[in-house]
Each structure stands twice: as C-alpha cells, then as structure tokens.
Length: 192
Image (cartoon, rainbow, N blue to C red; front, side):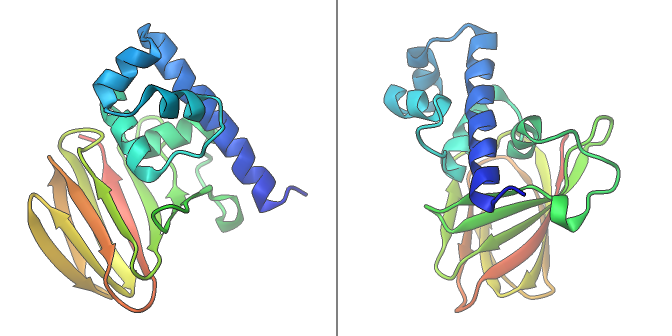
C-alpha cells in the first residue's frame, strides 16, 4: 500500500513531466515560457524536473498560458476518471505554501464540461490568481464550513456556511479564509 507521501510524489513527478510536455508541444524554450508566464526560467526548470512542487498560483499562471483550467491540467496527470469516483480514490493536491487543499471529487471527463472540486483553506490562508486559466470560466462556490471571502471582478463577497456565490472568471480572483477555523467549500467548475 502506498503512503500519502509516495502518492503525492508520484503526482508531482507526473505533473512535472506534463508541464515539460506542454512546453515541448509548443516548441517553446524555457525563456519563451518565462516571458509568457512571468515565472522565472529557473523556477520553471525546477518545476519541470520535479525539484519543486508548484504552488496553486504558479499553476494558475501556467494554465493561463496553456489555455486550460487547472483541473484539466491536474486530470491529465491523474488516472483516467471513472463514472463513479469513490471517496478514497479522489485525487488530493496540497499547496502547502498557501494553505490550500484541493480534492477532485468529480474529475473532468471527456464530453462533460463541468466538474466538482472540494477546496479547503486553513485559517488565515490567502490564495490569489492573477488571471483566469480560461476566460469566462464559470464557477459556483458553495461554502460548507467556516467563513470565506471571495473577490472576483473587484467585488469582495464574504460567505458563511450554506452561502453560494456564482460568477464567470474574467480577471483576478482571491480566496481568503477569514474565520478562525478552516473554510471548506464545494466548487463547481464549468468550462465555456
């Protein structure tokens, strides 16, 4: 049986390989990708060699350059999704730097535009995305526990347990856990 650390390192290794493949498919050098993404060449190189585990913010920038939602990128490095995804089989990705944990409850599937993600932000966590991975991406956020402040289109919305916020992503977004306990939410993502 694999330990969680082993599973995480497997995902990180596959993610690194996929990032290198995406750059190679476009014929870009590390310098060209650095110019397009605003991420240093050394950081990109280390991410492609699995020397570092990319943060959510870094992945978001790369997803914007590669014009795909983060969930699609992550699904490309996970096993092919089945129609039923058992709780124990749902891939979990952690960004320790921001305090964000992402569980792919209903991974992307060929022929379907929507997916379901469970997100958890530890108290005080602050996660910002400088651009949408896909302009016009539709999101529905249903807060299950805690308090969450979501800023989209320059408007801040404070959510309490049970509240739902829905919007299309056109610019920067920010997710902040403003309560004393973790904010746990369901996120429905629908590709335009």
